Length: 145
Image (cartoon, rainbow, N blue to C red; front, side):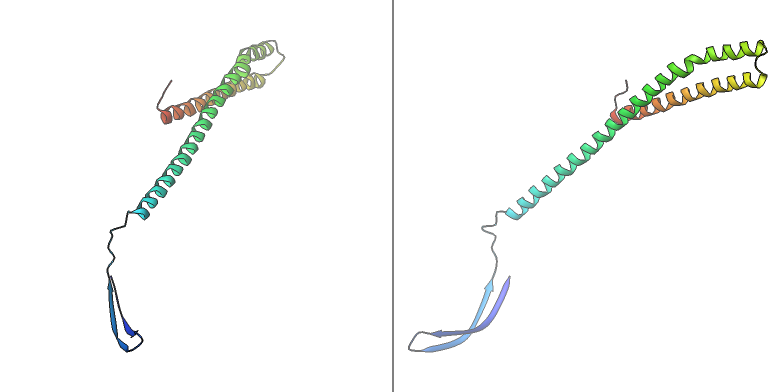
């Protein structure tokens, strides 16, 4: 609501009058169609959709990365077990034969057993990391295989 006051001059050619003019204005929402509110709501909805797409894309990227990590660890563990651990029995047999034949010492035999143990431990650690990554992936996606 707006109130106004001020001098008023009227000149009709023959006479000249002056007085005080008072004004009062009250806005009537007759033609207000809530255009500003609609535009604001549309902009907020557009922003929410954009944020949703951004968060969804980020989550999908993280999920793809986690899947690749799990598969990479699984492949590395399988490859390591196939190459390093598979050769361990032959290496131990050679070390035992060399010790029994007097070609190597007890320390060299123990070193061969320690190497075999480290190889198996490394394989188990790789397999554990691969399983943990896969479990995390399955928990996030909700679809264990």
